Image 1: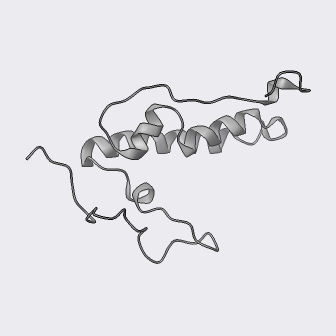
Image 2 (image 1 turned 180 degrees about the vertical axis):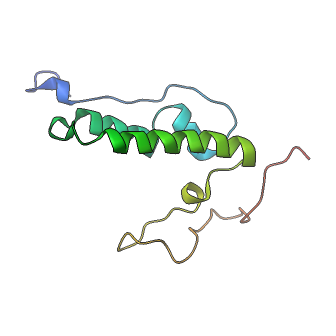
Length: 113
């Protein structure tokens, strides 16, 4: 699709890397470097006109990835800001948690029992 187009270097392909195990849904995309944080970091790295202004934002996204790593290992679920995220019309905090898939009780924790 890209071959023969001008400035081919502007295209970046991401794909499934088959990294991970049974873990949280968001952690699967983190392990495969496909999370919203990874994609934003990559986009900012390639935005040449913003290059001098993005280091603080990239650092913040990397801190969120480290925070995610620690949180899921301690709590065995995604962080509330990830787990309860939902679209809003004005980009404010949602007034209610995001709906769950049918049959998934809110607040349940995985167990071996």
